[in-house]
Image 1: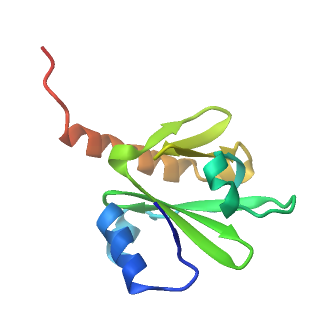
Image 2: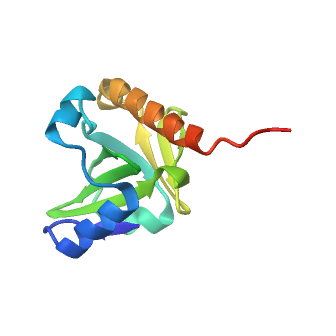
Length: 142
């Protein structure tokens, strides 16, 4: 679900908190060594996400925020901010020439650049949280 988060709104905050959980506290964030990525260059998006990017041929940036039950991808379009809430059970990540995040029939691909490489430790934390979430629902094989 993509929401306009340019201005704070109680309804929007409630929807985001319901989907991916409340933000980590300051102390938890320090223990985890950060819950947000640095901004990364958006290389490509699905057609349904095109309207949230800059229309002119400008570089588009996005960042990822880690939440207890999922992630938020923050996209800036001029003076507007949009957040894409993705619960862990819908999250699929491909690491091909950068990173590609897929969910809800949409995708966003981050370019393999210097800013992406600086976020390697963040992606390690993200993968650890996703694996821990998936382990909760592990089915016993025959």
